[in-house]
Amino acid sequence: MKDWFLAVLAIFGAFFIAGLAGSFITDYFGLWHLPGAGFAAALAVVVTAYVASPSHKLRSSFVALLVGAFVAWVFIEPYWYPETANYGDLAYQPTHLPFVATLAGGVLGLLSAFLLRSRAAA
Figure 1 (cartoon, rainbow, N blue to C red):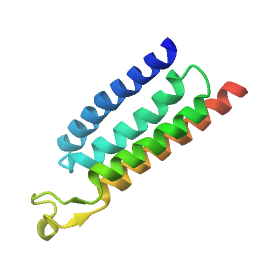
Figure 2: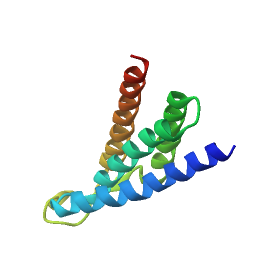
Figure 3: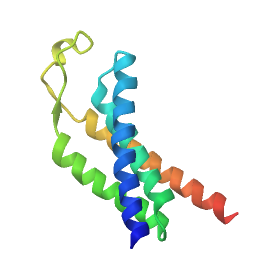
Figure 4: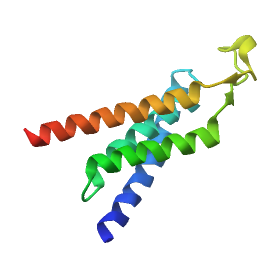
């Protein structure tokens, strides 16, 4: 039970650290920070779920992807473009971009977990 508790702590830590890093990096390059933060956080959560889980690693990654997609749907679907020069007339228009970027990060994380599993089996 202690191992699962530590895995959950690692997953939450990865979520916050990767989300902040993704946000800072995309903002540094002049892009909208929210899709970058979502992509990085989802990728980190799914991969961390695989690495930190004491058993059922692939299943844990898949559950992390499903839970994360649901939470992202609730909190950022739909979202609105920010008011910046990059988006012009799109400012304050609804968009699915943050959710799609978050989902893409989670799917890439799941593909990475499959790759890690296949490497471990070989």
